[in-house]
Image: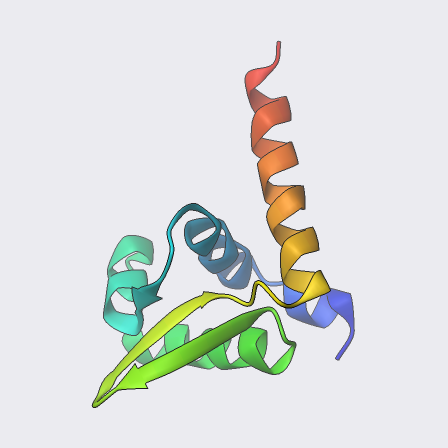
Length: 91
């Protein structure tokens, strides 16, 4: 999967931004923060996981998602988000 396929979607970028600021969240929490449909969010989480950027663990019916800290892609995405947010605050 190409980078533009993974990062070229606004909802996926918002998911990554949220998860770069918290340890982990379940699908419902992410959907609520985005005011988005649960099924849609789950689809985008799957794309990000297949790209190696996210990982999840399961507790019964609850799926907790987080950035995959072992992934160079995930570390790069987190660094990009942090850099972008820092530069927004510099005038």
